[in-house]
Length: 623
Image 1 (cartoon, rainbow, N blue to C red):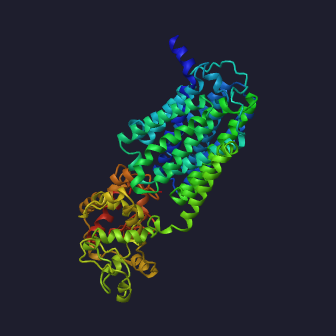
Image 2: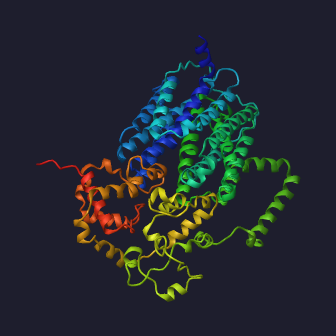
Image 3: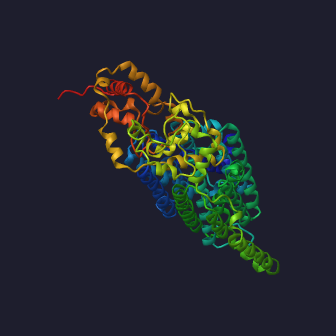
């Protein structure tokens, strides 16, 4: 009896928390990581994400009009069931089409659940502390997602956890209290729905862009998410921020909540642009997210000026379709294309969110606001026209990276000079004339070559490989004697150095043709040794091509295409000739993260090709 009474009193808190956990830890994290594990990336990944957004938009708009299912409890259970089935479906081995179906189910289930929950939230919160219960639910959802054991779990574990949680919510008793459908807002100063919709749209866009950028940058993740200390801090900030937001919303301070959400989110986005200040961004980002997230749930049910349950549902549908799904898609697109949130966009978002409040203030306080606005306009004009030199270093990342290359003494071990007429030309790339070398300021020929020549390293290594090698050389290059330069990635220097190295390229088609014509010597092929090939594989290849390889584990979300698990390829290698395998081993695959192993001898390459053919080629069935 006590349990039933507790659930009746706190069912809304439990439902809001569970939906947030499902959306955050599964839909935004585990499912995307699962796609990468399955090799669904690039355009395929975009198609899957579009399917999810399509399902979310469609069912957010259709749910308020589903008159054939008048029971709110049944409608909510249908949405929870679809969501749970989608989470279980993510555990399967999916191709691109199957992943798109699961993604559509994720979006559809969330569309049904979120709109139904927001529409009938009053009837499930009980009579006391309604908005505080909603705020506590949102805060607990974020808190659970940041618990280290949950955040750091494998994608299949996170998916299973989300499915169990959502099915458990579907089993809760969903008895409804009376709800007249009339708004309970008492301040009499309702902001128009289009203005609110636009404000939430700008906030979701801002949040989604920052989230995507942090998620796909190892440096930003390390400074904001990685480690138990960061996660527990984020969890606490989310919970406290959600409770404060709920308290303000109870006092009908929705405009203030949205203003605070923008202030924290916008400030965090600006801090992310400055390497030294990145850790500070992690203190503001969770607070801003929690502030607008609580308002996003509470607004349709408790703060909107809807005159009926039907109107409330339609407003919730448009809010989650446009602000939630479209705003999120636009933010992800910005993160993909720009890799940062421009300060101009932060300013534009501020105008959208703060504009109505500032306009209202200006009407009531004209004498005070006019001088302040004039002073700000003059300061902005001075900043744009008279003080351009006072801004940050305007040189390009490549130029800054070249300075890092010099200051860190890279020329002590690496040359940038291919000796004409030598074996260097095949291995490292075309040689330069002395006039081209002397034209560089300063020339970086190098003192001696203890490591490989870097004249055209950008043609041979991807940015991901270069960064990984700088952070932990021996994880991906067994014989490397190079020290770790991970400390450079605590600020901008690491990214700048990678940009410089990636710029060292040669477009010479003739060189590629020479590589394609290369093959190990006949004597090396005859004397190839199976056991030597096995050791060469373990030292140089297993880190990426074993299912649990170190580089594969650490970089799985960053690869352009996840390296194939060779043990799972079966007879596929049987279609590759030993010569072709040897060429791939020596020179890699241009345009991918697969590096060459130019330093291996012909004998080592021939032995490795032999071992791959014998170990990973299963006999083909006789016809």
